[in-house]
Image (tube, rainbow, N blue to C red):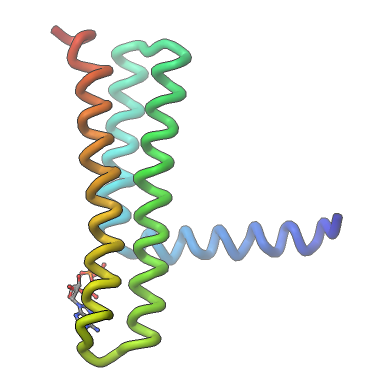
Length: 116
Ligand SMILES: Nc1ncnc2c1ncn2[C@@H]1O[C@H](COP(=O)(O)OP(=O)(O)OP(=O)(O)O)[C@@H](O)[C@H]1O
């Protein structure tokens, strides 16, 4: 295994995260994740619940990262207005929406019974 290559790839991945942080939607998901993690600490969750919350946060943020990557590629490939460019961006945004809605439902199922 090439350790230098591994750390270089890691650095590029971190640069990707720094790029994504400049996106308002990504920052919204990050802030939401921090709020959910703080609520989890204050409420007290089981190991399984922490695993579910961690997975859900990773899925939403991961999907938002892929959405950002798709936006960049579409802008590169089709800087002019094109129906396929619109479809590509809207479908990618739809993927984020599906995960975000599922995360809200899962969050409610985990937290509501503990609060009420
Ligand atoms: N090249 C294009 N051709 C046709 N429609 C486009 C094109 N680029 C963007 N759109 C439409 O405009 C919407 C907003 O595009 P934009 O590039 O601002 O993306 P966004 O989702 O607002 O992301 P961000 O502002 O975070 O970059 C897209 O969801 C899409 O419907």
